[in-house]
Length: 258
Image 1 (cartoon, rainbow, N blue to C red):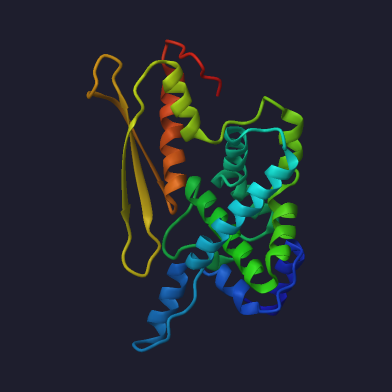
Image 2 (cartoon, one colour; image 1 turned 120 degrees about the horizontal axis):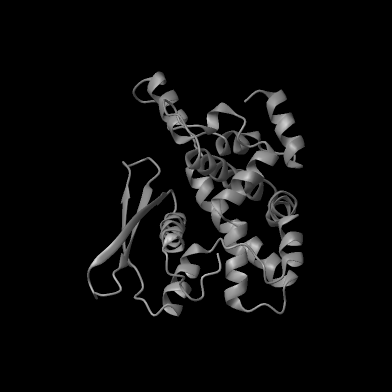
């Protein structure tokens, strides 16, 4: 990245990096790094990409969002806090936060030779934001990361949550699906998990949720598949699709309020 581009991004992020190589790595997709390596020929040193930073950023975000919710909603029980956290770290919310922060505007954050639209674009934006968060954490420590998360991810989402009270958005689709099926006296879905990806590349998790027929203990009535770079995101996407299917049925299922 050019010095001018880094300065623009730092202004949007509200953070100035001491080690510019960290923000370079955070905004470099693995396919971009591998292509540059191939252009340099055999024996070229491996270039850094944002996959490991995404992993670290995911953990830092979970900690800081949990801490913020714990302090903001002291009377909420664990289940309520988990649902709120699921919203804060959801792909959709992170993608919007990444758009606001400007982390997705740089070409190196996007994979080579593949168009990205819809959910794929949201995934890239969410991944880039997590990688940037990790870069800030490594560069400036936990307090710098906390300030960034509070400014770019948590607010005004927490204000909206606080004012919404019991009418909070359903974003923990997995828990909502389990509660919905339990209330209806139905069996929990059978879940099958797999992963793909070559060595040195980011793996893609696939989660298949199979809804069991009401008149059979084993017959599958409905199947949907979710994908994501993280297993929990794939699980949430599969559960969301099953919930959408249940909502379309003519019979209203008790306990369903999404």
